[in-house]
Length: 268
Image (cartoon, rainbow, N blue to C red; front, side, top):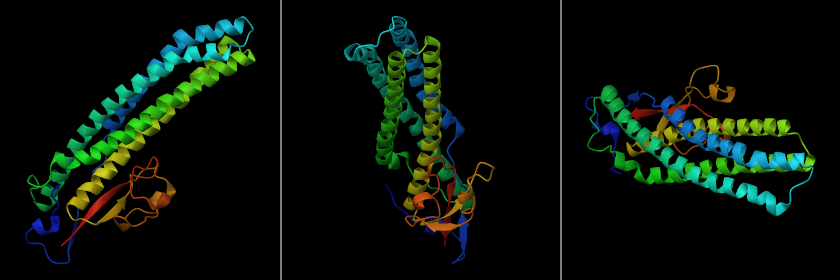
């Protein structure tokens, strides 16, 4: 990564003056694509449960007997294996989504510098700068995706086991499984939204610090969904690395479900 001082590349700027670069936010398209990848996992696990596990559980319930532990585990071995394969495939898809988002961010950052400051950054800002970070992001997201798949399997296993032991009706079992998959879907939506925001926040920080920019303005989404704590931070100036007024002192986009962004300050 080539480090440079953006302020030094701008001609004819009065010493002591400042400029602010336009904010760059994560795209809804990336969030939706991420969520789609996660929903493939949930849809396939739901199908596997419906077609191969529920009939066995219903038979046990109707026979009025609790299943043996060994038999129970055999029901779920295939589901566990299926979840691992689905999580791996979803992780690969998400990696491609993040790679495209990184390319978009690189282009957007260079375009913002050109539009606001008249500086061409093509010689110093490259997609290759982000390779190390993208590897880290891939590992983080792979762990989250596997966690979602594992948790969903555990929900299915606990729901089915409880239903058989307690002699619940087939209708009740199906309703409870539907509810558990809805919980997993809510978690999937949170992961997709939160990770795209965190990814964009990280890219902003990396590009700002690469350009020698140490300060930023906290910017919210300026809508009714902004939490009150973050609304009070709108317009405040922070330096990278110092605690903010957000949860755990985190920067914009890093608290869970935070849609705020850092707007870089260029000091001449």
